[in-house]
Amino acid sequence: MLLSYHFKNFLSFYDWVHFEMIPPASVVKKRFSDNYRTIEKCDILKTSIIFGENAGGKSNFINSIGYLKSFFEKNDVVRSYRNTINNRCNSELNDGNCNTSQEFELSAIINSQIYLYTLKIDHLGIVKEELSCKTNTKQEYKSIFSATRLEIDEANEKKLTHLLVAKKSNKNSEFESKGIGLFITKFAIIGDKEVLPFYEWVLNKLTPVSYDLNYSIVKEFRQEDEDFRIFQDSRFLEIFRLVDSSIERIEIDLDKPYRKSKVVRKRYDGSEFEVEIERDSSGVKEFFAWAIQIYGVIYENKTVFADEMDKVLNPVLSDRVISYINGSDHEGQFIFTTHNIYHMSLKKHMKEQLNIVTKERENLDSVLYSIADFQDIRYDTPNIYELYMRGVFGGTAYE
Image (cartoon, rainbow, N blue to C red; front, side):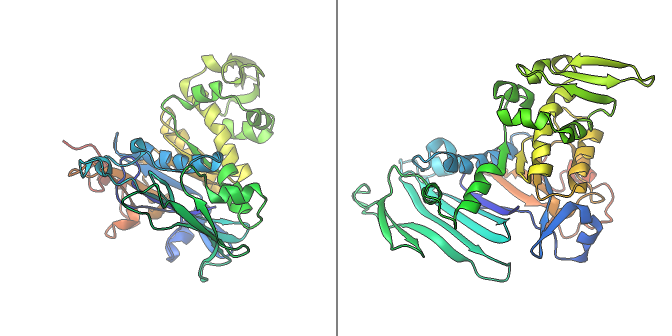
């Protein structure tokens, strides 16, 4: 499960972004016992919600984790690109000498081990990459491997761009840093047992979902064999029925599942009628696709970052979905952006679960923070979404 995710200098984000999946240490968390899971005496949130105005940076936040994961998915050159760094970094000096350095940190608990992965890159390639681990929160991290760039000859940056790679079970080695992929990928390819748990977690469990199109359209064009396996599981139907309890079953079309599958409903008198999914409501079509990710969270312990999962869902249904995830016994996580202000409730969520992304007026950089940063907000404060609508927390449009 994800413990924390930090990054800096990605698209609209300039300074460090600190995102945590840790509930408060106070007794208040006992009021929300369904909302977190305890592993090895470490409490971890199951869900987290991100609010914010349009063009505030919510999608960029989701895209940042997808950007980091993309380096794991292909053993290819790793470096920063001008179209991924913050505009201020791209133009602040106006002489071509822009700041291309990007940094990422991921912390997760996997198989009772706590891992910390750090990556720093620039336009030349990897500056630093390290994977560390420990067995409990009180210990210090011990390095599994580290790769650190040696000093560069500023007069000829192409001359010295070597990486010194240190691993406790190997002698130190030097590599050319230009045109090289992640070292964690290289160690995983040769079957290194120390790095495989974290590497496989990123590849198979960490799931960012962010698209400009409706997700149902995306899934139609990207039909995956895994989807058909999930369709056959009766537990998928249980999730899908959250959208409409009158749904009796789904008859999956193997050629065009996201268009021609039939949703069979039962009337009050017991009679049935069916509708092809493409002719059903937009909310049903969209949730049919998203239900696969919900299934992944609950039954495959995935950590899903979802961009506007509920943009076409009724607020009651959206709330039902989050309650279903929190109320189920699993080690998955669902982190999603939304414009549904009714999720902003201290009766259902801890303050640490409610986050806001907003743009700073001065330089239009995005920043992220949680309601827990507002110490004056108490759990008995009524209707905090009204405070949000009045701009008390930021994250709303301004003139």
